[in-house]
Structure formats: structure tokens, C-alpha cells
Amino acid sequence: MERKQKIKDFRKQLDTTLLTSPGLANKDAIRKLVQSQLQSAPAEVQEKRVAQVSNMLDIQRSACGNDFKSSKHGAWKLKEDTEGYRVMYREGPEGSPFHTLLTEGYADGPVDVCLGAAWELSLYKNWWPQYNFPTFKVLTSCRLKKVRLDEQISLLRMKVPWPLSDREVVLDYFELECFEDDLVIVLLNSISDTDSINEHLRGLTGNEILEAKNTVRLNFSGGFALKKIDSNTTYFR
Image (cartoon, rainbow, N blue to C red; front, side, top):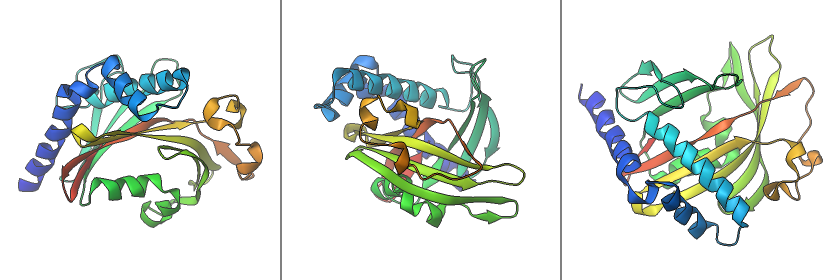
């Protein structure tokens, strides 16, 4: 019971930050935060990030509390609720191929260590579950291009249970630091080699994406928030 109350208290700290922080209150506040970090980026790149961060925060807020009312993103269905984490699901927008999964919980480690585990693709095989039966494991995880300190393009390839083909996703990672709120937001969005016209893909060619036979490329849109609870505890969603 004590551990269950602990995770609720940690969750409330993230909820309070998301719902009451002046720095995250609206698009103008988010724009100020993004512009301060992307001062040298073109205006259209900044505005794209503002829209993505705003959407991510809306989804994060829709999971606040325990009474999940329907929102523009749909209603959450609670799938698992333990002393260490909570998992929820909802269908994607009508006509969309996406399904939405949300997991949240806490880790016994500082924010920078948790961010490093999620940001450094070379570490994925060290912590990602590697199952032999049914087969589910990381085959390849590597960085393709470092765009800047807060952005990178990476490849993640997974082996999934037979008879499905291997799956891969090429992801654009973007980190936004909200130091005043002890919060870090990371956006994860899939890209394809046909997107080379975009500013963030210049210099990346199809040859840099290691080819693999019988592999299906996935689309992915999401991200996560890391909230500092104390010097050795981080809450994630």
C-alpha cells in the first residue's frame, strides 16, 4: 500500500507541473521556450517544434489523474496499474492506422541517467527485454546522424514473433529542456528517406540506412517526459 501511494505522489508532481507551469501554459509560452533553445534554426523549424511539443503536452495532460474523460485525443483505457508503473491504451484518430499506448512510472536514477538510457541507441540492447520465445529483441540500434546537441536521427530494428517480418523505424529524436520545471521533453517521430527535402535530413542519404531484407518500416509518433522527483528518482510518461 505504501509503494502504491508513493507512485501516486510522484505522478501528482508531474501532473501539477503539466497543468500549472506558466512556461508550458500555452503555445506562446512554449514558443518562447523553443525559440530560446533553437535560436539559430529557421522560423519554420521552430514553429514545427512548437506544434509538436504542444501536441505532446496535450496528450501528456490527458493522462493526468485517475478519471480519464474523453478528450480530442479519445479516452484512455487502463490496462495495468502496479506499484511501479501504469499502462494505458486508446485507439488512434478515426481513419488513422495508429494505436496509442502510454506507460508511466518511476526509475531509481537521476534525470540525466534516465535520459542517457533513452537517448543513446547503443545502450538499448542492455536494457530492452530480449525474449527468445516468443521472439522479441533488438537487432540493430544505432545513431545515423547527429543534427545538433538536442537532435539526432537513429535506426532501431527489431525481431518480432514468427510469422511476422522484422520491423524497423528511423526516428528523429528532439530534446527540449525545461529547467525551471525540472522537466525534460523528448519528441520521437519516424521519418523516411523520401523526406530528404526537410532541413533536418540534409546530408543523410538512403545509403546510411543499413538495408535489410524482409524488413517492414514502421511509422511512429510519440515521445516522453522525464520529471525530476529528487536527486535519485525520476518519473517518466
